[in-house]
Image 1 (cartoon, rainbow, N blue to C red):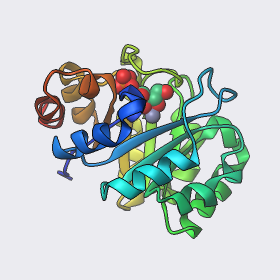
Image 2 (spheres, rainbow, N blue to C red):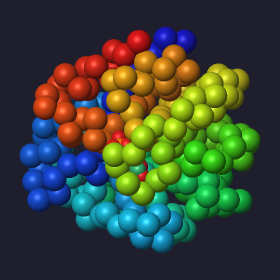
Image 3 (cartoon, protein in one colour):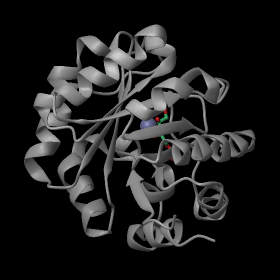
Image 4 (cartoon, protein in one colour):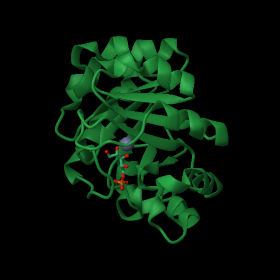
Length: 220
Ligand code: DX5
Ligand code: ZN
């Protein structure tokens, strides 16, 4: 199945004192989603922002908002992120474990698209039975917590494996990849089956954000 490639710049690499201009700049540059990295300092060793930032960004853009929750017990906050205006909420298998499917169902019950995320060292089989409950599956290609890390090549076979499982469901489920994506490696992740590419430093750090998004989207 040939499908549109979506580029989701991560505002983790934006200047937080200028968030409105930063969000507008990626929208103007052709971003498909705004990727919002929520970190609690417990699930990951970094703290970013929470519900209010999502709600404030919602007020200034009609771009779909992709909230990547790197927090413990994400099920406690699903309703609040939904109410804040997230279009996608993705939760980590490592934070939910046996509670993953109920958490995905809770997200969907809020009228929001639901995604399961796994870290680079978590096997795809851990989420295999949850895939059909997902609107999106997110594979981390760095260990979560910080922008600007290098892409972990060994995640590529997991992209292929996940794509096969998605195809077997026959459902319209997006496959997102997050961490270290650049114009130089985007072609390989797209060939492996990813169709949503998160990029923080490669977009916000680029001299020309329009060009950076174009290069990632069209990479071969
Ligand atoms: C890492 C975050 C990523 C990060 C990507 O924990 O989930 O979304 O912002 O940043 P880059 O593209 O710089 O690796
Ligand atoms: Zn992320």
